Length: 365
Image (cartoon, rainbow, N blue to C red; front, side):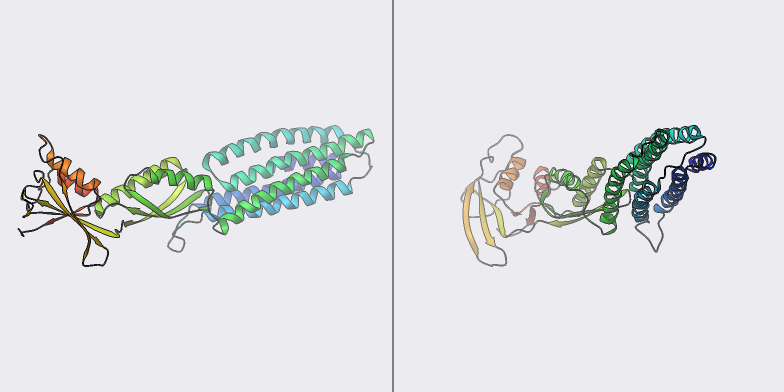
């Protein structure tokens, strides 16, 4: 921008073009904007005790400032178009060459800056790239002004007003994006939908009670509250870490993802008791028990609302009868199982632990 300012101002000085001189000072304003972007990028990632979440929003503050510069650019072009006169120019070829050079450099740099802004997901660089892209149009307006002056026509005023409409539209979009972040608006629904799908892929997740997300500069902050089918803290931590890892792989530039988890609460409490063959006592052999007594309680009630005796279809299985019996009780919706002997890390213990089913030791007969 500094080089372009020197080139345009020198060409304006030697040609006597007022519109080119105005465009030179417009480029000088772009230089100030670029310095602002540079300082914003340097400050954005800093964290301190006073700003523990970083200064990411500085990017969005500067994006809003750049939007203001874009609006002012439109205002400048309107003034340039209104103030164009029929005065002849000297060394007009110098002015034309400087504008062609400026258009080429500005166009290529705008594309390069947009590519980098998309790569690192920086709203400030993308905003500046959009601004510089608009500079291509303002240069074309000035070039049209000079060419039409040479031919004796002055139709560039109408083109200038059309360009201003594009400039205002671009500035408005950048302003809205910056304000959305500064006001902590939610991140786009597509991103939240992607996070929901990732969380729902975990079988132990019973419910997503809350999911929110916001942007801060180029980075995202996501918070969720989920219900897990486990009371095991180690397993819950493992599941939460897995969800965070999967989400960060699928969604770029997440600074923090905070997941609150709650164990599932049962309205009905269903107990299972292994019975002997005559159904009169508690069996000491869990997997070989032919019958199970199922006793159901409503939450906070002391009297059972349902009692039934069910056959164990796996009591005569030759292999893995304990695991198969445990899986059978899981399918019945059992929440707690009474046993006379501990499983000692055998198969049924892992089945019940995985499904958040409580195993209760009893000495009763």
